[in-house]
Image 1: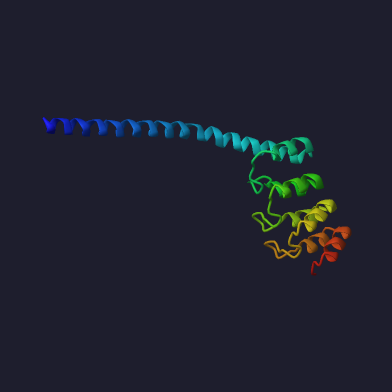
Image 2 (image 1 turned 135 degrees about the vertical axis):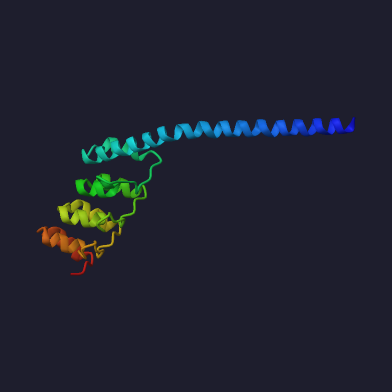
Length: 170
């Protein structure tokens, strides 16, 4: 009789473990099925944020930056959020992205930092903000060019002066 009760207890314990495992597996399956949707939503969110940056839609950018975002998020066609904002040149948007924690020295696939892009495109206000944020003024891209060299080759004397005043080397 004791043997039958012992087997019954073991059976109940095994059944309990099975049910707990099934519930846990079911929950993880539910999370997994939502993951692609979440990733799609995340990509859409950032795509809209990059679009707002390019349109200089300060309100939309400000609202998006209130969310828990990755400040160094990168999209192939735009670069990082900070790079995209620097190419547009809006100092308010650039400051907001930096305040969110963006790396001012994060280089793209060609080694260009946001300061390289600002210097190359003549975005004086963007360059000022990046210098104030302690961007590396002597960083070299994959071609060995510094922001100062790019400002010179693209004929942006005001940016050249800003960079030299900040200590940029020839």
